[in-house]
Amino acid sequence: MDSGNIFTLVAIMIYFAAMLAIGFWANRRTNDLSDYMLGGRNLSPTVAALSAGASDMSGWLMMGLPGALYVTGLADAWIAIGLTAGGWLNWKFVAPRLRTYTEIAQNSITIPSFLENRLKDRSRMLRVIAGSLILVFFTFYVSSGMVAGGVFFENSFGSSYHLGMLLVAGVTVAYTLFGGFLGASYTDMMQGLLMMVALLLVPILGLIHVGGPAAMVDTVTQVNPHAFSLFAGTSVVVVVSGLAWGLGYFGQPHIIVRFMALRSAADATAGRRIGIGWMIVSLVGAVFTGLTGLAYFTQHPDLTLDNPEAVFLAMAQLMFHPFIAGFVLAAVLAAIMSTVSSQLIVCSSALVEDLTKIGLKRELSPRLQVWLGRGGVFVVAIIAMALAWTQNNTILKLVAFAWAGFGASFGPIILLSLFWKRLTTPGTIAGMLSAAVTVFVWHYSSWSALYEIVPGFIVNVIVAVVVSLLTKAPDIDTEFDEAAELAAARAF
Image (cartoon, rainbow, N blue to C red):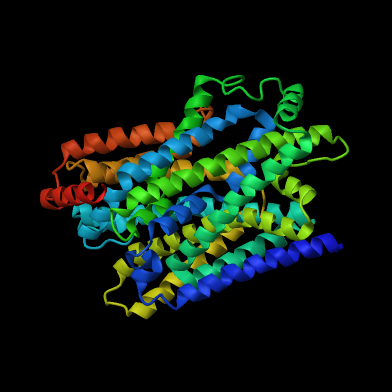
C-alpha cells in the first residue's frame, strides 16, 4: 500500500473511532426501551434536523445523485427539487402534529404503535402489518447502504467489495448496538456536518481546477449540449417521477421518528429552518459535484472513471492531500452509515416493540427490552448483508425502490391519521397493503418509467378513504382535537 493510501486510511480510522466513541457515550444514557428507540424525547432541533437530513440522504447524495448528474445533466435535478419541497412540507405540517399526537396517543414510540393507539385498534393486526412492512422495505434500504459501503472501499482503495461492505457494516452495527437512537442521532448530526462541508469543498476545488464556472460550462456543454437544461431529453413522466420523490418524506419512519423525539412541537420551526438549509446546501453541492466532475474528466482524458457513481470519490482523491482526502471520503461513509444506523434502529423497534413484545404474556424489564432491541439490530444487519453480498443493482435504484415502498405505504396513512378524523383501522390496513402491492407490481411492470411511488400513493389514498367511509369511525374526537390544538399553539 502506498503512503497516500496509508494517510487516507488513518483519517478514516480516526473517523471510525469518533463514531464508536459517540455510540459508547450514548450507551451510558440509555436505560430503557424508550431511550433506546426514541432518545427519551429530548432531541434539540439542531440534532433532530441534522440527523434527519443525514439519515435521509444516505450514500445516494454523495454517490448516486452526482453520478446521475454526471451522465445526464440537470434533467435528473428534478429529484433534488422534489426532495427539497417534500422536506419543507414534512417539517412544516407533519412534525409539530406528529410530535404532539404520539405523546397524547399513550406515548407511542414507534409509527406502528402510534397508528394502533390513534385508531384504537385492539386486534393488534394493524401493528403487526405495519411492523412487517417496515422490516420488508428497510431490508432493501439497509442493503443499499451495505452496497454503497462495498463500492466505496472498492473504488477508493482497490479492496474487495465484500471486505469494504463488512467493514462499514461492522462499525455501523457496533455503535448502533450500544448507542441506540441517541447514539445514531448524535453520530448522524456529526456526519451531516461532515457531508455538507465535503459537498462544498469538492465542487469548489473542482471549479478551480477546470478554470472557473465559465470554463466548466463550456466543457460540459461540449460533451452534453443539454446538460444545463432541466427539460431536454425529459418527458412529463420523468419530471413527475423526479418531483414525486418529495412525496416519500411523509412516510419514511427513520426520518419522521426524529419529529417524535423532539423536546416539543415548538422545536419543529427551528428544526425546519436548520434542516432545509442543510438540505439545500448539500443538494446544490451534489449537483455541482456531478457537473464539475464531468468537466474535470473531460479535460483530463488520461484519467478514466469506470463508475459515474464514484465521481465524488475520484475527485476527492485527486484534489486533496491524502490525509485531508481521507476526511473528505469519510463524508461518503458518513452518508452511508448515518442512514443505515437510523434504519437499523427503526427495524429493531419494529421487531421488538411492534412484533415480539405483543406476543409475550409478561412484562419485560427495561434492560431486557434494550437487549432485545440490540438483538433486533443484529438480526436485521445480518439479513441486509446477505442481500447485499451480490452487488446486482445501482445504489440509486435500491434506494428508489425502498423510498417508494415507504412513501406509498405509510405517507398517506400518516397524513390522514394526523389531519382526518374519519380514518379507520380497516381503511388503514387496506390502504397500506394495496400501496405495497402496487409498488412491487409497478416496479416490475412495463409501466415502470413512471416512478412507482406515484401510483402507490394514489392507490393508498383512494382505498384508505373509501374503506374508512364504509366502516365505523373510531372514537377519537377528544384526542384528535387536543393534538391539533397543542400542535398549533406550540408551533408558532
